[in-house]
Image 1 (cartoon, rainbow, N blue to C red):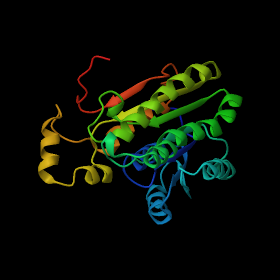
Image 2: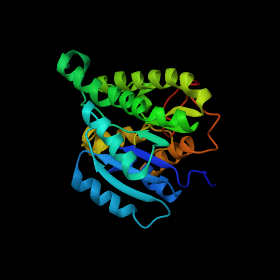
Image 3: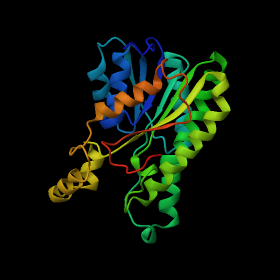
Length: 253
């Protein structure tokens, strides 16, 4: 299927590896011009080099989305390199694990900046151009935890749920301007984050056994859902959360 986004300019954060890289790769394959952002310059440059030569274009700009001043600079630099942003994929790294009783105010403040405010500030920075042109796609990468909280991931549960509520509210504000705002909520996916959280092979085996499809997702499977939400065909889909979890969330809503 042609997603009709060839020539569009996209900004993908957290794009040096895992789900972010898979989404950037999919966008380039669709002919989009993609600004890839992440903190580590060397990893990011290597990732962008992998995507060069495809139908679209990939450029790398190192940035830390937990820093408000760098978000504005990132969007300005992206605009200068490839033009106004048509598609934003806000994909911030997950905050540290920990039960509620062991988290202090500093832990919460860092999580707010990294996970919630990065999505808010990125959207705020790209929306004026989207509204002016009457077309835009904003997709936040969250987690199945917005539907079914995960034990010990207190900060991620709370912050990603806040992103979901923000996105739903923003979607209502900008829908008439031709801008959609959605979330893709991955289940357990084979990434470095999964390895950090479940380093023990026995724990990973038990977790996999609890998933109805009996395996972890691959990043490209999450990317496929995100790409649909970025497409022209998804113009009537807004304010939604698309869970891609192998049937893990036991809910009808």
